[in-house]
Image 1: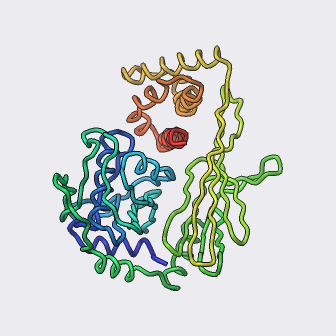
Image 2: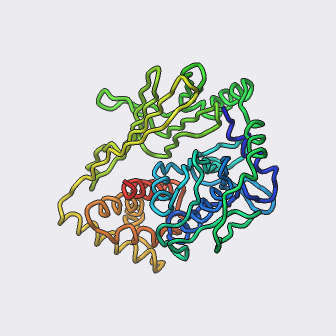
Image 3: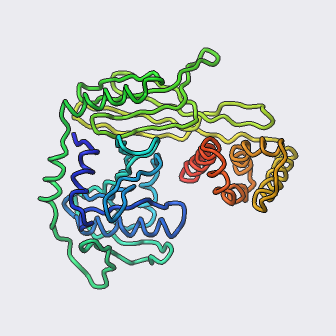
Length: 379
């Protein structure tokens, strides 16, 4: 079993980017330009590595390998993006890897581009941004080069990558240290650990509360410490947790409503299935059915929100009540977007910098709303 934290360290010892791995300070998958660049790198790396895995490390300064970290990214539908735009797409996996010295709630992203059983050239099957249908790329040194002429797939990196992966194998000491470290970091959030199939050690923590005879947890963190992978992180949402000898089940909820009439709605169920053969898989199912509200109430809410956003955009001093209303903007714009007000997300995004500078709590609310909208969009 590969310890992903060790793997990242081994990759970064190859200080210069090369034909089997790339490093990025961050990924931008919210714009066509950002998606296009990401797809180009996936295409180039898979074509340069037909017989071995290749990697992208996210949250690293390019020049000095300083680990700066990125936000936890839980987009289980990222494979859909690859499949939609590339011919002969590889299978990819995005994982969130915690490092002790990173800022709170930051991780290093690790994109694993898995080699294919039957190698074939990947290329763009649809145009996105400046990357046109039919274009294909290959990693040459540290560059993702556009290939004009036909080329053949060659095995150049298998021995090197196999050696790196072998040197990153986990051991008992790494696992025990990780359990102790997790317990210490989350001592105020009821840390627990579970062992599945005598191989997988999973740690989890959360603030427990009981509502109508049902137990929920907030501020939940779940890590597969045998691989040093953060599986789940929730800064705000409520979560129910169940498990048996084969599976660990997480059901995530969000709370929505107007004028303090709040209700809890199931958002997504995620199941970790553990096998005897040393593998596990994560299956996600979107459960969310958007709540519907009275149109008159929604139009009033929309106009009120827009007036507040306009004042913020023009730096007009807000009244005491308006300052309180600011905290409701992310959730209320989410409700509006879900009820057919298509410009609601754009209005919210227009004051992103204001929300970020206002307070950590408000910015977390904003990021949660964007995360929910992204999940629904991919579904």
